[in-house]
Length: 256
Image (cartoon, rainbow, N blue to C red; front, side):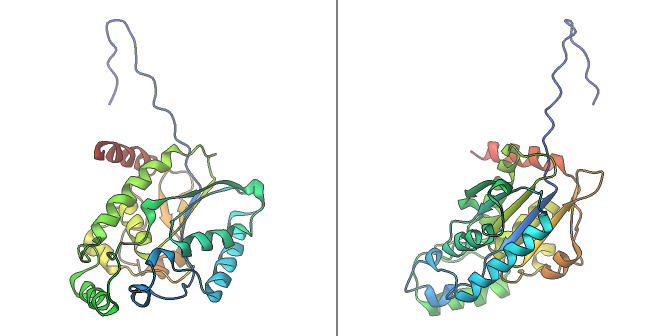
C-alpha cells in the first residue's frame, strides 16, 4: 500500500533487500551401514555411519555439485548432525576449493524424524508399516515425532536462511534426510498434505535442485528433481520468492 506521510513528513525506511541464492540444493545422505530398524536396539540411530558404497556415493555427488555450481561459484552448506549426513558433507566438500566454501554449519532442525529412543526392531518395524497405512505427515511414532513436527522445525530453519550474508546468486546446499527434504519442499512450495503424500523420497545421495526463475524471485524444481520425488502433480514453482524469507522468519519469531 502507498505510505501516507505524517505531519513531520517522515517516511519509514525502505525494507532492506535480501539477497537470494541462485539455487537451493537439497541432498539426501549416502547409504548407511545399516537401516533404522536393524540399528534400533544396538546403536543410537543418529550414530549410524556411511557404508563404503555410501562414501563413494557422496564423493560422486560432490563432483556433480561442483560441476553444477561451476569453478567460480560459491556455496553455503548446512547439514544434519546425524553421522551419515556429516560424513556425506565431508566427502562432498572434497570436490570444492576452500575459497568456494563460504559457510559450513551443522543444523539440528534438519535432522531425521525421531523414531523414539531405543526400541526393539519388531516394534519399530510395525510402526513403520502402520505409518504407510496412516500417512507420513500425521503419523506419530511412540515416544517420537510425527511428520508434522519435522515440518514445523524445517519451517523455522527456512526462516533463518534469510540471515545468511550471501551474494546474490550464490548456492545453498542442504545435506539432510529423505522426509526432511520432502517437508522442506512442502513448506516452500505450499503443498497441501494430500499433495505431500503423493510425493516420494529421493534416492540416496540424490539431489533435488530448486532454481531461481530468470528475472523473478520465485524458484522452481528442475525436471530431474520432479521425477526423483514423483512431483508431477504438485505445484513446482514457488508462489513467492523473497517473501518466503520474511514470512518464515516472522513465523519463527512468533513461535518462541
